[in-house]
Image (cartoon, rainbow, N blue to C red; front, side, top):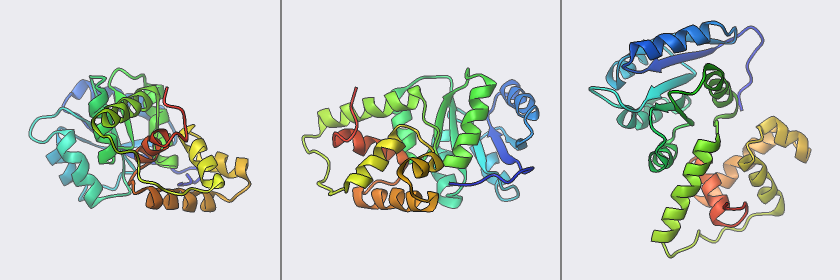
Length: 224
């Protein structure tokens, strides 16, 4: 979990080939004191070039762009700049696509008709807590899981988790922040982060999205 210092701002780049959308984001973010748009790109290729000169905390990345789209660009950024949070943007509510992108390392997924406050909240939450889950992403992950279950007769690998680990995993799936979890279980935020990393290692997943899917598959949280 990151901590934002008073007076500092989250640096954002938006990559989208629609100039009007970029202008709308720019206007919305200009109203916020703790977030600043530091760059814009028309496509993934231009974005990767920008990243050689600018260091954003968060990127708003459109899926459909000419020359190099967001799906191709996402793993490239994650490989070169693993600490940058990436929020995928799309016009479509495609569950299989959401699940795929979250597994590739996306930190959030928003439709482009999301209002400016939702975009702002996603930026801040991704920066501070790594992931921003909403009804869209949660439903997509569960749908993706049902499909995998249907096509895969094997259950999840047998992993022995302590009661404390299960409890913390449940709280993570409930979208509690690291600090909130730390307060609830009477541990330091650093210890909670260490437990999260251990859970990823134990279950063999690479992302929070993977942990959510593991928790559902193992019956730790309800699959509704």
